[in-house]
Length: 387
Image 1 (cartoon, helix red, strand yellow):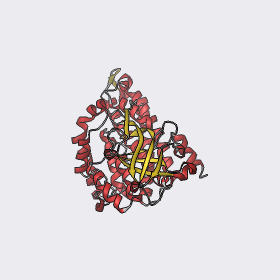
Image 2 (tube, one colour):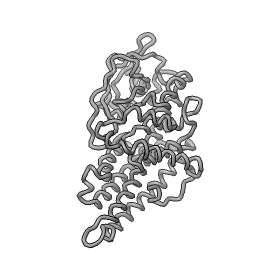
Image 3 (cartoon, rainbow, N blue to C red):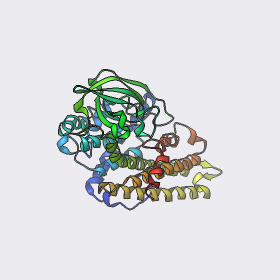
Image 4 (cartoon, rainbow, N blue to C red):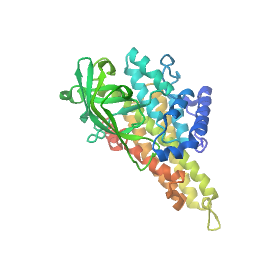
């Protein structure tokens, strides 16, 4: 699977430790996760015991400092986990959200007490993380959130509802986007940690039925006078939430780009294997010049995407990845992902439309990549502002 594009190793990959880690991650997904994927797709979530296994194997909080219970790695390790997860087809396991999006908020903006309290339990799998941004009426417009957190003595009282929350059915630590001062718009937004096992008034809605990513639990969440200590505010003061979100969104958006490249590689590999054995008109589908031309186009575009994604990863490691470039990674690669998978499905013929075939599952799983993390139209707006 890894050799389908034959792209020369990027600078950040030129490390024996990264190569060894990649192999170990791939073996974990192959051995521990792959046999259960169909079961997870049917039940709509990944069970908590699998999170614990991932924690024991060192796959949770790979880039969190060792002093807080993490593996002490960096974003290279997260990129490897993303790749291997896509190559092995473990699409519903929300490990990347937990690792590369939510844990960094706590390590970057949390107090020493908060980091010592939450990060070791995230690394062990005792806590599963989610971030509650999107609301029924807001979509990509984060400044328009209506969830409030009003101070009452040494507590915040949180009221509001969220939707499309990844890990929503299983998470027991939720970074909640709320307005501590609704009169200030975006400047009144704060991030507040809610440990769901310790509060009253928190409710989960239904596990939303999606057209793809069936194993990923995605939920509505309701906060009804949920009281949490004011010490659960992320950051030294209220009103920092929007800045915190904007600081970390480039990494989240590039993560989506990396997921796209990984799935593209798997789609091409699956399709090459299929067309070389599928018989039609006295030969294989591969024997048709059209098949070879289509896959040549897919491989070329995928190679360009991987080189660009590796470039963005190197920038991120060097703290040089800006919002516009991350938006390019997210929008262009996710658009390409849907295009290439569509071409690959076509080469499968009618079998490609069957849910039992990996390419059919990838077709459905890929579509949301152009929506979450900020719709691709928003990405183009962000890029345009730099011109």
